[in-house]
Image 1: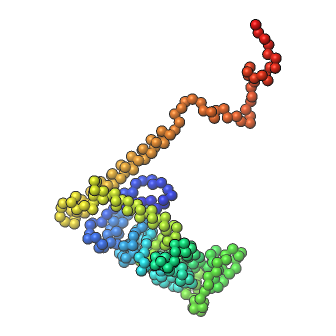
Image 2: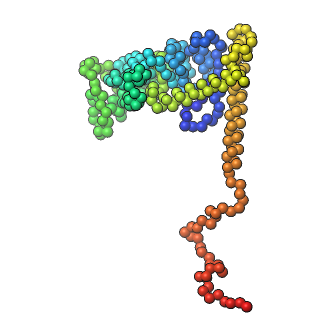
Image 3: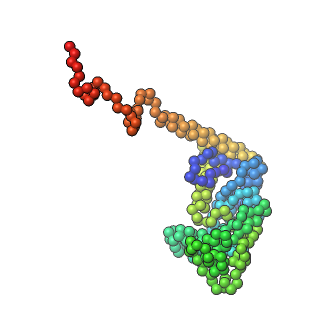
Amino acid sequence: MSGSDDPSKPAAMPTVVLGMAPLRKPGTRIGQSAVLALADIARRGYPAHLLAGDRAYTQCKAEDFQLPARSLGYQLVLDYKIDQLGLQGTYKGMILVDGYFYCPAMPETLVNATKDVRDGKIDEATHRVRIAERKHFAIRPKSQPDAGGHLRVMCPAASPAPQVRCQLKAASEGGNGKVRTRIRVMDVLAAHPPKICAQGSITVPPDVGAKFHQAFAHETDEWHRAYATLRNSNEGMNGFIKDGAREAVDDPERRRIRGVAAQSVLVAFQLCSANIRKISEFLAKKAAGDKRLRKLRPRRKTRSITTWVPTSTTAITPTVDDASADPDPPLTA
């Protein structure tokens, strides 16, 4: 379903269901069903941007959900189960941590930051500090992905514009002194530097770390804004279509017919009805809001006190009531 990924901006349109897959037994073929709906949405010309999914989708095989969704142009925003947190893989020396690639010298306390807070080993304040510290070790993209999804990346100490200092990248040791953060290189890493440390950049194929890869570094403010907004939109629409006095899509008594195909068609009609109702409510609220704004506009036609606010160039014209205009006014009979 559609949804805004920026909570700071007012909704330009209502959240509606854009596509659906044929009904299946709950909890089965989750990734494949999602891809069927996404492919149909793409076929009808809707643009692809951010795509949020709960922890059920990180259980899917990459070839069933993550890779097909990315091939359609979607950027994934995902969460993980506790046994999926921390180190998730490696590639040419880089370590994949919570869906993002980092320098192999990143301390273990930072690698396990989110896992530790969920286990109760650290408090939330410490967790936030450690998530912020991860940015110094984050692998940087050198360019946009090519047409085949291959991405050229470099380490945070690589030139140009190194973000940290590292003994394995001599150019990062110079500069104007503004870069002060130093990566502490372990002896084994210094003795046998991997490609990410030895080369200026490397290429990451689209299927590397695909099961956990996502657009934003997990648990950062940017990730929270996107994930929370999209997930709230999704859950809100779920509640909307389950309204017992309306479509009640979770009530089988509303669809007294046998067969998965027939059930799927009837659910499609119910979702269409919900979309129409959602659009109508959105337009009604918008119209009511515009009407309230019009009522707040001043209706008075009399002059405001601000009409007489003086300026530095205002001329003061004497009047007959002003004693200073004539100290000895003539007397009349």
